[in-house]
Length: 80
Length: 146
Image 1 (cartoon, each protein chain N blue to C red):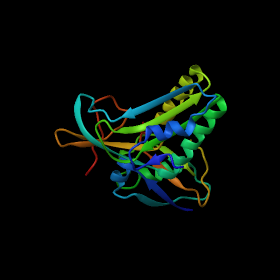
Image 2 (image 1 turned 180 degrees about the horizontal axis):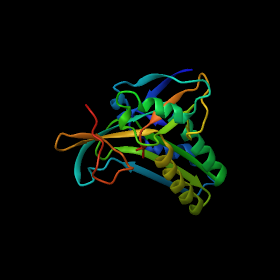
Image 3 (image 1 turned 60 degrees about the vertical axis):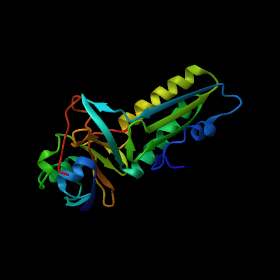
């Protein structure tokens, strides 16, 4: 499965782009996604468990990804 | 109506959205840009956001507040470049009486802080800038490349 992962703020700077393409095996989870991102240049600076949004919802690491899911890697939130 | 705005916040307009003759209490919370952070002088800041998720989460916060308390609520969060003293976020809650208005308003601002995918880049008087990371202690930062 191929996914486009949206990146924001400091994480966009870490990876040098506002989005990044990741290929994962069928049935992959959010944890697999984080692991794949960590192997990319810049990814080594990610925290142990970065926030991941799947279809606009913060998701735990066990969540299984489906083709077409909108994925986003969220730095620590700083609104308000 | 979108909850994110690139324009200055019109607090009176927000209050007018929730005023009703049977609502005797109106509580407004305004978060405005502070001129210091962690001992450093802040000169301005920029907000960026995962916009469709912000809109979805704000709608959830509004719906939940109006279900949990007998209130009418309105809110807006700024995005883009802000100056010291600018309103960054505004929440208005109108209710029959003050207790539920204060309770709902306090709950909403905590939800905003905990759930909205919004990021803040501060610029300091010494020319440096940094993304604000509330998970780090005050005065620390994650500089990142320019």
